[in-house]
Each structure stands twice: as C-alpha cells, then as structure tokens.
Length: 183
Image (cartoon, rainbow, N blue to C red; front, side):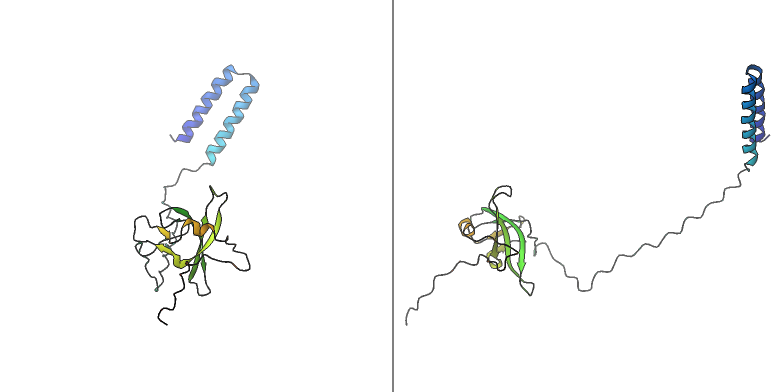
C-alpha cells in the first residue's frame, strides 16, 4: 500500500466519522476538501531517484595584480609618517601637530604646516616652518618630530593661509654677520 492510497483511506474514514456527528453543510464542505486533497495527491508524481546537481561552475579566482618592478622598500627605521604627529621643541615642549607639507615645483618638501597653540582647536594658528628646521627620528621607538625653534619663535610668526597670493614660512634663525676681521 502506497502512502497516497493510505492517506486516501484515512481521509475516507475521517469523512465518514465527521458525517455521523456533523450537520449536512459541514459534511459537504469536508467532502469537498477531501476531494481537493485527493486531486493534489493524484497530481504528485513519485519522487524520481535523486540526481546530484552538478555544482555551479566557479569563476576562476582573480589573480592579485603583480607588484610593479620598480617597487622600493620603505624600512620603518628609515622613514616615518609625519601628518598628525606632535612636534616637540628644543626643551621637549609640545608645539602642535603637523597638518600639511608644502612642496616646491619639483616635489621636494619646502615647509611643514604646524597647527600651533590653542586648546581643543580653539585659538590655534597654522604656521609654515622651513623643512630644514625639522628633525626626524624614524629609528627611535617614539618616532618623534622635533623642531629647533622654540615656542616664542613660532608665536611671532604670521599665520599660514594656503589660499593667499603669497605665503611666508618661518626660516632658520639669522646668524650674525661675520665681521671682516684682518682686512
């Protein structure tokens, strides 16, 4: 006996039992529902033997692009990132943060812009400082950026305005003119 024919027999028994206690309109509805179930069961085909579905063809993995042939290493003991680094003065005082680097027409750095002074960004000024006045310590654990100028030298400098027609930067301190001794 198949499962479908067993189910039909069970439905017939259930319909006869309900008919004995149900009102005629309920019996008609139940008979109709049983007929629908029998129709659905008759439409079902016995499941064919399961055939394994072949796996979807996978796209070949895209190879990583080859590194350029002129790739040069940047050892961490020889180079550091400076944007956002604190700048320390000669007495290890905090002078501000490096926020920009100004380069010349050949791409060489000419100055670094230091966000100087203020508290939580209020009252701060951006000062351009000659690149040669900075000292970098990529081999140190702290990787400090230090400046040979003190706080007073920077406070006296004009604010750097990137969109100004011309800008000024704090350069090296002037050395006293050597006198012509022995002339």
